[in-house]
Length: 595
Ligand code: ADP
Image (tube, rainbow, N blue to C red; front, side, top):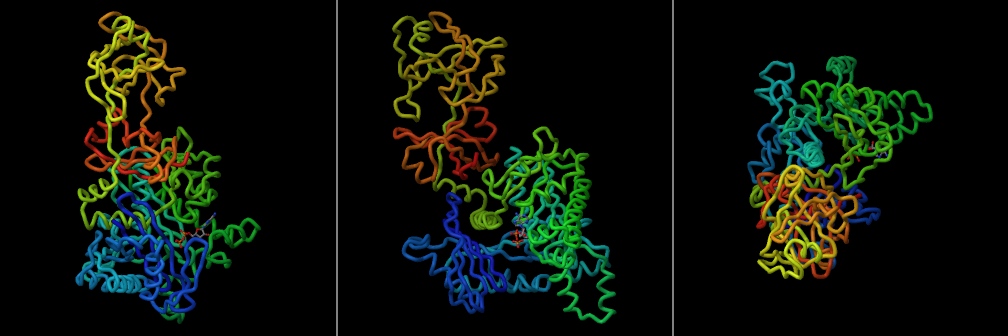
């Protein structure tokens, strides 16, 4: 199913189109300067279009996507996901948009006067042209479970109860995406991790995430609170506003001052773009330096505060234009945080840019207690995932994975024998008998089995897979190796240098092999057509997504391409058990992993 994600602003319309069966991105771009000299921008190319309003912009986007060689030429959009900034207290998860939802979004415009009306215009324009379900995904929703003590201001309680004056938090899809990436990287369920996520872009916020739930975040009732931002002041004493008003400034002027003329721009006098301010600071501009200092100081202050509230941190995550690209900011934020187990690997930090390593890089020192991750945020992908969850629920979303599934083959411990070793175990010239075929053509499990004898224990009745090979190879799961008392390395089949040996026992005798025991590196077999359709090549490393009770992503899956291979993910019994997978399971291709 194709999901179109729209982010309608007051003068721009951003779009991303995904094929959710594989989560492949089919197209992305934006229409800028809606209303005056509009342009459709895709990558580096910009084409003038007629777009007097958001409906006009959407028409231009549609014409582009539905062109004869475009991604919508053959099939329509299955659902449209809208990024909506404010959902207030009533829209706390993605919703299918109906009249009631629309009315609430309209009401919430009081909290987000610039954003919600523009988002609504996008919703209405899309409804006029798509006969597909529309889903709203809210910036505020991921923070909806913050406890009262985190979301209340120290104001009369009635202001909250009657007018909804409270902290809501923003950048939800980005914090949620960072948390998901961190959980994948840490190789555990999100449910057990304490994370601090820093979205540092033009707007910036930090969130404290405990067991997958956002328990505090630096933005408040509006996106003005918290960190120093490009043009926004962030935290300040509200008495300043009173003072400015008493001195004669109008409410609109103060609004303008706090939202558009403060932050990096206001302190430095240079501008809102961090790179410009940083360049000026490096040239010695005193106010530019101050602006950078303030920026870093506040990020660190929130990180420290949230670490205290969480009672520790497993990973600190950086994202957004500044978080992803500025090694200097990451280094300065982290420098005094050694007491929290944070220590950066200077070289890796300096060498890491947005998009490295498939979008998530660990820049902490290898032995540091707390991981520090740089994640290329992908809010639109997160929104597309949320659209699927909203429309079809987690179980049916799983069915979407099954639309282009990779079948799983669980590889139970087994042995490949050489002619000489087969002779030693079963008698000279013995012919092993076929019991059943395995998925790879020409290979079969034999009726005969062997016992393995190690220094600590034995495994009896271990399967043999024929045909015979040049050298005997024993493939175990890690728990098998523990039982035998040996420590085989993780290897590809056939790569046996430096591997330990073991004793094999058959009906006609014992054979001691000096090497040949491995833990098989997980891999996926496929033929060249399948490889082309996934966009991968032999020996690429890919990730696969596992859904179900033990949802996870497996990385480091080696692609093996051969004409006679059938599409099949090979994992061992330990891996299968950890992921809740069996021989009738499927997983989804989740992208190539950069090495
Ligand atoms: P927005 O929040 O507006 O979507 P981004 O997340 O793209 O924006 O972040 C924009 C900010 O990131 C700008 O302040 C820009 O200067 C900053 N940025 C981009 N690249 C770098 C870099 N290499 N070093 C420092 N800052 C950068």
